[in-house]
Image 1 (cartoon, rainbow, N blue to C red):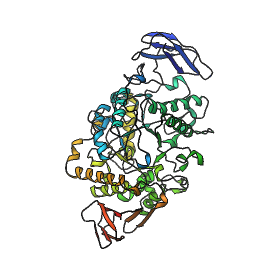
Image 2: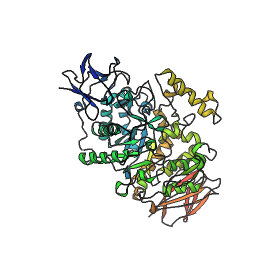
Image 3: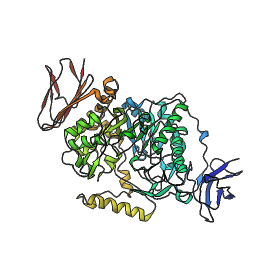
Length: 579
């Protein structure tokens, strides 16, 4: 007999409505749970909860299926009905991974899981080992980035729902590609979230940029932590995904003896061992604190890797010398870039002008494979006023230099959809809130934000307009033409070289040496038997290299090696291999 259950510790009465019939629920038990066993409730049945004497039907906070959106009734979903074909699947280790971040809604014209399946062979041939999907939890409206998820256990119906995601994961594994999912555990979306009706999922004891913090350490937090841990395990167990990217963990406020991140890492590791396959956690952290990714054996949280913003910021700031607004004001020297390559964190306790305080702590206990490097991602493109990509911002030649650095750097490289063929389409911020006040607030706030930086408000794309969403979709036909095809060839060559070169897959930062010239804007990095040199100055730079050094790859035909002398013209990068 089906059982319906919901956590609602303060409710005086709870009923469940299943296909129009209402049943009283028993509870709460000592942990605040209410339950009811009813004869109804087959897969596909509509259900919801009546809290107290309220006649409004609320969806299940743990609903696995919201085919009509987060405001409507939940539907019973049978996770066991899908027939998987990936029983022998093993994802590649992070140390040799090539990640590819994508937004399902703009990755293809159709914006669905099924449509994405058609591009898996392309990703495999490019050399991608893992797709990283931007958030998939159901949210209100026709389009959005997904970071305002409302029903965290329900897969976005517009993308194809839970069955669609399973088909994509199964097909990706058949192509040898792992799947990571971006999850948001630092806040709920402002529209369509009804968890507060049931229990203290948030706490006013702490504040975040989104208001009250997620309740990781206040009264009731044990079940809230269980909610998020169970959500994480669901993606891995029921959808066979190979790991999660945790959004903005620096906004987790948790003063518990066992931090939520550590608890999550422990439970994911246990599931990984039980299933006999690698499952990983990757954090987005603004803390510059290696404690996030350090092993629990050395008192860290045990997260497998984190995004490396310092690498991105320091590289972008030398590529685009005129951009010094916001956090780019803390970067801009070749020394910053060299430090990010050698130590991951540029800021390790010194004063940050942007933050107006000391920032970070010394980087220790971890290696390069604890960091994900990138030159573009959804934030660094989408949070620009016009959503312009790196090639559009710094030029084609410098974008090729950036790609060369990314794919020879010691970190786990990650590409953002379309960067590999210098996509002309922007990736802009878009959100379709079905609440009029929220919609207006988002549009006006976006214009005010960039007006403060001198932008004409009329030039700022309106996030709420469908045209903003549509123009952000990739145009796949571009990759066959002109400089798009040239960039794609460059990426394929770089990825293939990285994959077949042992020195580029070593995560020991002590085995990397860096030299640079601040005035002439060149930098040389050596990793084992590979030497990488690039030049952003106005004159050609000559570098003496060992006699047995052979030019492996270069971003232009004018890069030469003659009699142990490497000549790198402006806006070029050279990669040499020693015999």
